[in-house]
Image: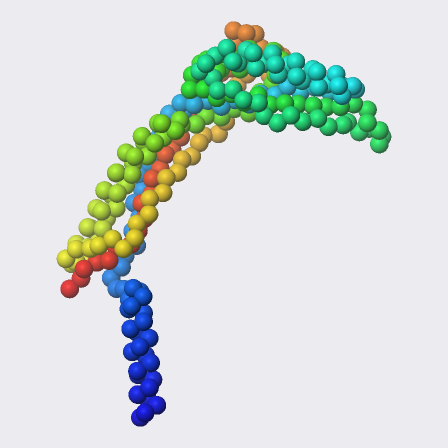
Length: 230
């Protein structure tokens, strides 16, 4: 009996510790999730072009790449609505029969603008000496924030509605939120661009044909509620 008494006392003490730590057993908890999404027009265009060359003389190669990039930078910087930056500069040897026969090099030019028409025209002009490496579209930070704020409000209302539906179905007097999480995400479309003549330099008045499309902005609210069931 004394041994059993010690076991009971230990169990009660352990239960007390658990309660003191704020981790009591919980009942009538339900996990819920609500989502809201909206298709938003992509209002920002991103273009990466590069200058590329191959020469036997590495110093002449560097001069060629620098000259082309300086030309491109001068044109791009004429437009205040275009954000301009340069990317990685890279050179490497061309090995044939274990001998360096030439050198290749390239450098990227990165452009970004909310003026899609302007950047399309500029991209066409720059293809006189540079080539398109990649093109993509996105939602600007300002527009994304405005849409997300609107969707957060709608998603929270949807979460509360689901909580009430569950509570009413189970005859609960009410509920309280145990935990809640709000996540945002977006999905961009695939790159879409088309040059009218892919193997030749484009004329200055031939803007790149582009379609920015839309991105899906989504807000997910997930959490746990505890029903107050008699």
